[in-house]
Image (cartoon, rainbow, N blue to C red; front, side):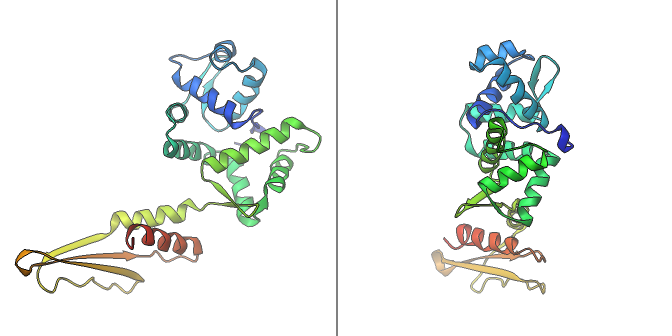
Amino acid sequence: MAEKDFKLPSSSTIEIKKLMIAYAKSKSPCSLDNISKLTGINRTSISSNNGFLESIGAIKGGNAKEATEIGKKLGLAYANNMEVEIEEHLRELLLSNTFIESMITALEIKPRTNDDFQSHIAYSLSKDLKSSKAVGTGTRTIIELLKVAKVVEEKEGVLYPINHTAKDSFNDLINKTDIQTSNSREGEKGKEDGKSSFTKQITNKLDNNVILNINIQLTIPETENEKVYESFFEAMKKHLLS
C-alpha cells in the first residue's frame, strides 16, 4: 500500500482493541451505527479508525464492514486475552503493510527515540506532528501496536526493530535437529559436517548398566547477521542448557 493510502489510527490501542472485538464477533457486516452501539465509541472516531484497520487488512467492505480472516483471529484473541495469539496476528497484519514495513526498515538503519520515531512517521505521511493532536495520537498508537506485536522493542529510551527472521531461523534449526538414541555403552558420536555445530550429550544410567545417549546436533546457518547468533545462543541456553 502506498504511503498516501495509509491512514493513521485516531484513538488509543484500547479503542482499536474494542473495535476489533466487535468486528470479530459480528456475524454480518456492520454499519457505523452498529459498531457504535456495540463499543460505545462515537461514529466519527470509528470512521477514522476504520481507515487504519482497512490499511493493515484487518477489516474490509463498503459502508458496512466486517473483519477479514486474520482480523477475526485478532479480534477473538483480544476477546480471550490470548497474548501470544494477539502478538502473532497483530504482527502479521502490521508487517503486511508496505508503509509500516518501510518504517521498520528506517528503524533498522537508525534506531530512534519514541518522539523521533513519531516525527519520522508523521513526516513520511506528509503530516505535521507538532500542530496536530490527532497525528500525535495516531503515531503514538502505531508505536504501541508495534510494541505489542513484538515488532519493535525499547531499550534505554531508544526503539529497535526485533529481528524475527533470526528467531525463525533458530526455530527451523530446532525443528530440523536430528536426535539419535542408542542403547549401548559408548553411544554414538555426533557427525561432523564441517559447519559450526553444538553437540550436547546426555548420559543416563539405566537398569542392567545400559547407557542411553542422546546426541543433539545444531547447525548455525551461514550469515553475517549478528542477531542470528544472539538468538541462537539465547534459545540454546533456555531450551538446552537449563
